[in-house]
Length: 139
Length: 287
Ligand code: SF4
Ligand code: SF4
Image (cartoon, rainbow over all chains, first blue to last red; front, side, top):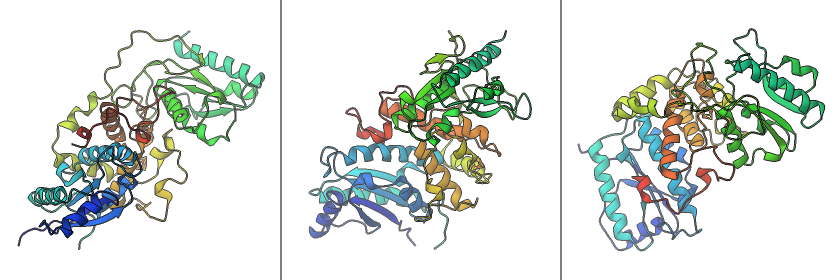
């Protein structure tokens, strides 16, 4: 049977989540592997969430926020960019495959981009196979 | 007289002067342990205490560790080596201590020794600088022309490994962890109360050394120290099972310097990198 990756999406309320909605309402086709959690801002994401997701069996984590300069709160995503960049370095140096974690800026009007990113990321993660490095529980 | 003896003498002299004149209420320095090679952190509060102060090559502890514990506005004199002074600077940046409450006794020194192994501490486990970056009084002569080597040389081997090998390396190291929290206790930048590990809602990771908790504890601690760790190496020296925590801390320090063009604890005027952003920041860092 084909491996269907389980992907955690974390999307900011103002841009990426709305972009995902748009992808849906315009009936774009994209893989169903991403389970999205909505946060008010990408800077609200505690890097431990991402570690935890991998521990609980996520095969990939996709974070979406507003484009730099477009943050609903002005500068939230500028802080988030630094935080998530460090998170990426940590995952990588710990030995996680870098392709399992991705950050994208997707605005509310970019439903198409959302669909494309999800498709691309899902394929990347699929190619890597199940994530076992951080996983602590069997399901 | 050796350089170390001279530092010890000056330390006592300045401590006495500061306490006698009431300029400070405590002098954080080193005192005798159970033998010469095992000095301990020591807080001198009276002129009589001053006789107990010592300094030698085994005085490795980073005394900046104790600064945030004092009530605000306490006047404190603190003895610092180069890395320790960076910790003080970082604490001032983070508004955990105020510059005006401190008398910084700078110790220019190289060739400190590990209490456990007796080996000389170098750029493998620390930033290996010779002179404090900030001080009021220098207790020894400034050191010129010291070439300590890059603090990041030691990373080459791990950086050269593939991801699987690195994961195997860290898993094997973390498995040794007995979760004594000595690393956290020794670190000058680990002042949070409560630490995320002490929180029960949410309970991020097991406090006892379960395999599940290893990754969460260590990776999160590494994250919390990114851009803040000043590479004193105390966490690794404190670790009873010799986990090379310094490797991860150094890696993140290096990456942060690359990405944010700022090393931790170098200038009081800097804003801590992780609660800041810069115009030069680009999406390159997310690649
Ligand atoms: S993490 Fe280790 S090396 Fe870094 S400041 Fe803390 S004790 Fe020093
Ligand atoms: S000092 Fe070593 S054994 Fe103790 S908690 Fe830290 S890493 Fe684990």
